[in-house]
Image 1 (cartoon, one colour):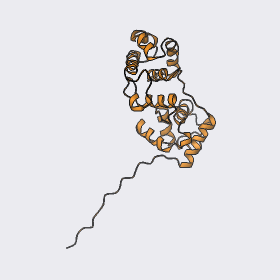
Image 2 (cartoon, rainbow, N blue to C red):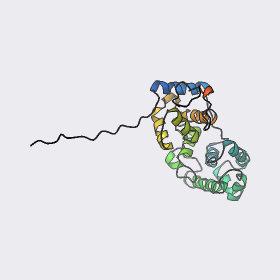
Image 3 (cartoon, rainbow, N blue to C red):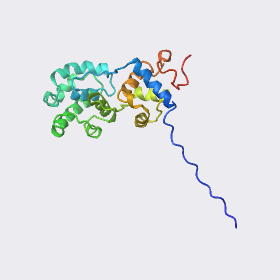
Image 4 (spheres, rainbow, N blue to C red):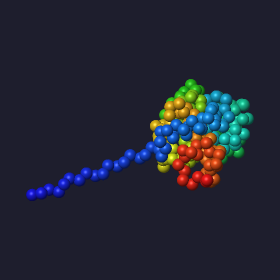
Length: 229
């Protein structure tokens, strides 16, 4: 009696981390670094607490619009205690030019109270702790950890997500997928500033509708198929 040969299911191939080679990734970040050696975030702040508030307010809003509102606000409320004393109504009035200002005012007061009650009025330096605060998600937490505390986190916003997918650097269907890939791919010397470089590149060069490929410093390694000649 003969038996049919055993068949094994084909192995699923692991998703490719990047369309760029390791050498190309190095050139990618070296070019961004050469263009902007010390990139900075564009939100105004005076301490970790005001940075946290500014990032919470920046959701679905421009940095310039947030800065216009927070300039006067932070002059009178630059600590959790001062913000709570100011009260939700006055916070709401101060940020009324920002989208979703009603919800954001509630979150600012609530997170301030939580900082006072649970963290000695200090901004925690752990992502899991930050994510327990009202209005704070993973992206906000990563921004605060990176800018305020110098941790090599990668905050994936719409600009960074676009650049990572369009260039082939770290393609992914979700912000978390892109973040996870970048954490593995970005060479260590570039890790601290990586998210700033990618966000600024997406904001000013690799823009959504008509990317400025002729002036792009990573044009030679970018895998975007529709680059203009």
